[in-house]
Structure formats: structure tokens, C-alpha cells
Image (cartoon, rainbow, N blue to C red; front, side):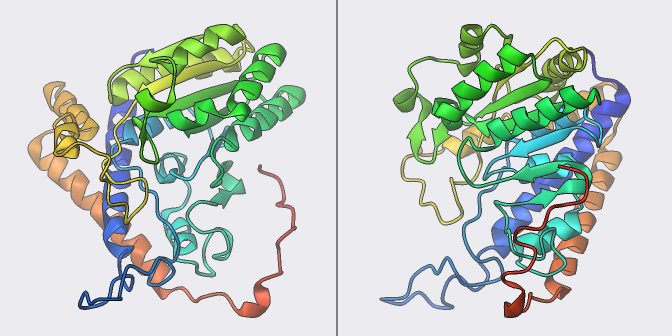
Length: 341
């Protein structure tokens, strides 16, 4: 399934937006977390600052999200994990309300009660959570609902390669195959499960090979390339819509930041990230667009500036929003959303 010029430009613009967003959050996150002057006994305070708690960023993994979501409709659902900003943005989750949620503000998607690992947007059929592998069976449930309703909707489970060693992954693939569910499993191989390399945790070279054990197609996207992911995901999603069942895609991606912000990354070889950025997926797609006459240097500069403005507006919206009142703590905890997920 070849990408159209419209698809290529959409993916490029969305990748720029994701990257600028993640790079901006990387800076904002440290506000208030480090003392003005490092002194003995004073250390990083994870609960302090503009964004309390952990922060897992997806810079370097944008191609997996845009290559998948470019084929989805609003009725299709995406089920993510703790590192999911890229898929949320690619699924059209509003950037301002998403940022307010990450900041813990009342204008957030869940009035600031979920934070960055628990983004929930029923209007755009998107959800994520912090439990490794937990979104995979959720996607199967959404796919089963779509199948029973005959809606034609597809569910996508996106997760890291470490989650493919969880029981939920294997149970979900078995069930999805058995019932021919319209679900696509997108495994993003960034080589590290927290600080453990894939070679040290996984007995096989590619999780895509595991699909054969469940009688479904397994596709390996070997490069961090949005166009390659576009083609693989497009075929898998079309197959699911035709009622032919699930597909497992494993894509090689790169994680530019640590497992979480503040991760000392002592497990990474020196200079590894610099080497990864030499094959940056945004630059790869940008060069393709220029070669195809769909973009020029001035256009690329303008697109980057547009992305920066969008991110700046979202950050400003979140900063201006109020914090929830303590009395709200028990409100809406068990409230069911009308429609959507």
C-alpha cells in the first residue's frame, strides 16, 4: 500500500509536532525538580515541579505512530502504554487538553487526575495506561465490540518489545486469532525494556516470528522509516477491516531519551544516541519529500515553526489552567463515559 502525497505530508507534519512536543516536555519536566544550586543532601525531587511524577518520552519513535494512525478513522481505537504521547498526538487527541492533563490541571482530559501515563479521550477513541502490556487485551475487547456491532472499526494495541514477554501479549494473540478479531498489534522495538537490552531478555531475534505460533501474519519493519511502517500498517488495518483477523507488526524504533526523565542511562554504550540520530526518521522522510518535489527548504522551515507554535500554545494553555480542588478527589472516579471507548 503506497503512501499518497497527502499521507506523506500528514506524517511529516505530525512527526514534527510529536518531536517538538517531546523535546519541550523534556525541558519543562525538570522545572522545580532540581535545587537552584546542587548541594550535598539535595537531590532530584520526582514529585515536585510543573509536571509531578515520572515522564516517559517517545522521541525517536514517531514513525511507528504516524505510519499506523494515518490509516485510522476517529471510530478506530488505539490502546497504549506508559510511553504513548506519539500515538496520542497521531490519533488527534487535543494537544492543549492532553498537556493540561500531564500538568495535573482541571482542563486536562481527566481533570488532571490521570497524568501522562493515563491519558483517556473517549471522543477520539484513545487510551493508555502505565501497566506494561495491559493495553493489549483492552484492544482485543474493543475489537470484539466492533466485530459484534459490525461497525467496521479496527483496534490497535501499541507497546514496546518488553511487553511481548508478558502473558497478556500471548493470551491476547491467541484469542484474537481464534476469534478473527479486527485488531493490529504494533510492537515497537527500541531495544530496551527499562535498562535491559532485548538480547538479554528475549530468546528470539524478532517478536514478529511469534505470530506464526498463533496462525496470524507477522511483519518485521526493520528500519525506523515512516513510509515502511505506512505500508505495513496499511495492509494490516485493511486486512482487519475485511474481517480476516489480526496482524502482529514489529518495528525497529529508537528511544532518544532514557526510560524516564532522570534516568542516568549508564546501561547505554557511549555515543549510542548520537549514532541513532544519524538515521533520524524525520530527516529521512524530509529528504524523501524534497526529492519528490513535495517540500523545499523554506517549506520545511515553515512546517517546523508551525509545530513549535502549536506546542507553545498547548504549554501556555496548560500553565494557565487551574489545579483541581482537593474535594474533587473522589468525583468521577467510577463515572462511565458517554459513548466512545
